Length: 434
Ligand SMILES: NC(=O)c1ccc[n+]([C@@H]2O[C@H](COP(=O)([O-])OP(=O)(O)OC[C@H]3O[C@@H](n4cnc5c(N)ncnc54)[C@H](O)[C@@H]3O)[C@@H](O)[C@H]2O)c1
Image 1 (cartoon, rainbow, N blue to C red):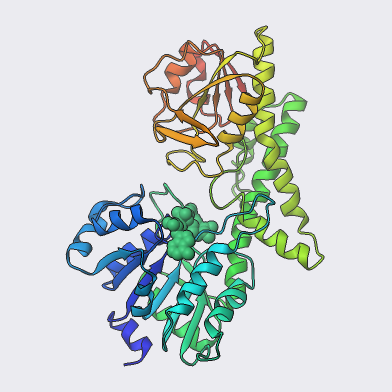
Image 2 (image 1 turned 90 degrees about the horizontal axis):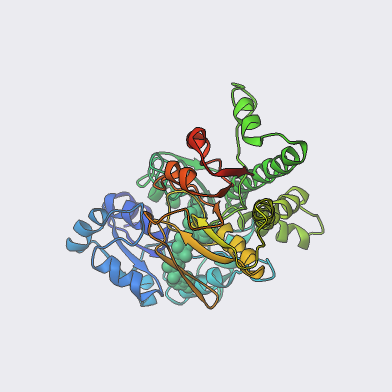
C-alpha cells in the first residue's frame, strides 16, 4: 500500500515531535481523525501526562485524550525510536531566540537529526515550527537526504505547514483555522495534503515550503508592526494630552480600511515578539534590512520601561519615592485569560521596578507562581485588599480580576490595558492610562 493510501485510510501511524502548545492540539486532531498517534518529547512530565490521558494545556480537555489513550490509539514516549515506526512525522519543536536575538535553530536541528537517524522509505515529514524561509530545505531536506539513500518526492516527502494556534481563543482552534501548506515537490504536497485534509476544515496550498514559511512571518510581522505603530501613537497621544483609547475607539467606527490594534506594556508570548526577528536576521545576512520589523521591535521593547516611568511619575505625584514603594502588578501572563508567562512584558516591568528598589508583589489568578532568575514569585490571593499598595500596575487584563473593587480600594492605578474604563465612573483611585 502506498504512503498516500495509508494516510487516506488512516492506517498510517503518525508521530508528533514536541507535544507542547502546538503539538498536543495536533495529537488530539490526529486522534479524532482516527490515526494511531504517538507524541515524542524529551520532557518526561508531558509524556507521562499524555500517557495518563491528562491534559497539561488549558485549551485541551483531558476528555479529548483519555478515550484514545485507553483505546491504545494515542500515547507518548521519550524514546526517539518511535519515529522509526511512523509513516508521518510532524515537528512542533520550539524556535526561540538566543540572547543575541538571533534564531536558535538547535531544536529544529536536533529533531531533524532524530528523524534522520530513524528514517525509512516512504515517510512524510512536516515541519510546523515558525521559522525563516528556507529552513525546511536547509535543515529538514538536508538532514533527511544525507547519505544519499532517500530522494525527496520519490521515497521521502517533506512539507512545511505553519501552526496558527491562538491560545485562549474559544472560537478558533486547530480544526476550524485554515491551514497553509507547502510541499517541496508536487508529490510531497499531495502526501501532506492527504494528511491535513483529515485534520482541518480548510487547507490552503502554496507553491513551496518557503512560501508557507513566509506566510506565517507576514501574519506575525503584521501584528508586531501594527502594535508597534499603535504603541507609538500612545506615546504621541500622551505628549499631546490625548486619550489614545478614545482615539482608537472612534477610529474603529470606520466600517472599511481600518482595523484596531491596541497599545500595551510590550509584546509577549512565544510568537509575536520573536518570529519577525527570524526574518530580519535572515535579511541581514542578505544585506537587506527589514526596517519595519526592526523599528517595531525598538518601539515595542521600549514599552516596559515606559510603564516603569509611568509608575515613577504616579508615585512622584503622591510625593513618594520608588525605593521602598509597594507596587502590585496585576496580571503577569503574556495575554489575558492564559497562564503562559513566556516573554511576558510583566517580567521586564517587574525587573525595571526591582532595579529601582520597589517592593513588588503580583496578582494573577492564572499564574499561582513563577520563577524569574533566582527569584520565585507567588501571587497574592484574588480577594486580598488593593488598599495596601502605593500603586497598582495592570499589565495583563484577565477577565476574572475584580476591577470595580480595585478602583474603589486602590490609591493609584497605572492601567496599560484600559481595563478599568468600564468601572472608572465609580473610581476612588487615580487612574493613569497608557
Ligand atoms: N504557542 C503558540 O501559541 C504558537 C502558535 C503558533 C506557532 N507556534 C510555533 O510552534 C512551535 C512550537 O511552539 P510551542 O508553543 O508548542 O512550544 P512548546 O515549548 O510548548 O513545545 C515544544 C515541545 O518540544 C519539545 N522538544 C524540544 N526539542 C525537542 C526534540 N529535539 N525532540 C523532542 N521534543 C522536543 C519540548 O520539550 C516541548 O515540550 C514554535 O516554533 C512556535 O513559534 C507556537
